[in-house]
Length: 551
Image: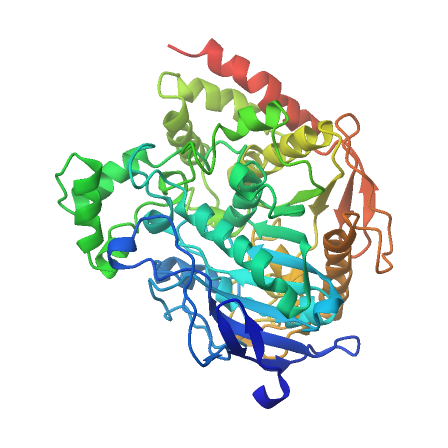
């Protein structure tokens, strides 16, 4: 079908793409341009350094081939794939990896410069350890909603987040710099794809949601983004920002690098085979992963200080969380026996270890006892899943729900349009023996899990092709996806999720007092003051509890 797709001229050269169309009567054909370089290969002497702008090419670049994923640990991806099946419509299997990864995909319904379509730039999640932007097919989101979708890669794990010191050649946050370079590419080239460079929305989920908000705090992105959507991730969470120094020392020890000067360390790291580099990082999971930091360039202060002093970009902001963020895929590693039913001691030990990372001089056992007591009514004492559920609720509130509410509150206080969602819609193939017999089921109390919302926002039910494991989307799944896409693309176009395509329920503006939000499900409804008791627990009571038990 490539002969039906126009050859485009952009700043660096010409592109040949192909056409596709979503499986819905409302969908228009979409032009696909894949694997477009936006940065020089960050290999050899460029490894661990800030990205550099791509160079022009001769002839016509074949943009019909799938992109390579950044180097990452495939074992984690395979574990999640048992619960999160994806259609491989773009031919980008997880094994297709390369350090030459600063590439992006573009999906657009028009290549007329006069179209001036809203642009949505995706920031994929993956806990900073992994991330595969190339698996997301934008045919439905673009073709059913008349927007341009851009999906760039960024370097993950140490390749994207290692810091050798603020004043070194590797101050940190290379992954954020990769996205900023991609946004500069969008500014310079997106008109050729029918997009409006003055109407760019970044949207990300999980670690991508955290990075979305961090870009709202960076002086380097101020003129590049005009709206932002952060899903299931906030840099105000206690375990997602500022870590990595101890992990760096473990990494260097594992690689037998004994140099002390940053330049010497960098030279040694650039010589390590990439597969060795990935292998030694498999243990750096969750709070032990390399993370974004205050580097003095991309991020100049802590997210808390930037938020509390009103220094975020003054742009429309949409954010929210799932109701079961830590009840599904994020709980299958910790705590022990979660699926069988964890004990009180097992759950307590997990939280104690996590709190010690941030509060080393505190009697963490007493702090955890106080917090767990606030969740004693989550389930009956004779429920074998009582402590698994306490873990899920406590982790979900402290890592996702409360930080997102605090972030929305800070942004709204700047007199910026702010919208908040709480999604409760489960995906059936994780709760059925007949739908997706090859897909693992989740526990009955799991509703909308971490990682579920991209299915809906990307319109995966309308993307042609089969899901693995015999899974399929129900009619309700598809109709909910249609509605969710309308809300989110309305916001990308206008800064208001209600303005544009017709939606069934008015999404209220979030404000710092009533904290009005939209509960997203088959029948959306407006609500307010989500988890008010837990917001108070973690923002008011928790600092006092920590102070009370500090040594």
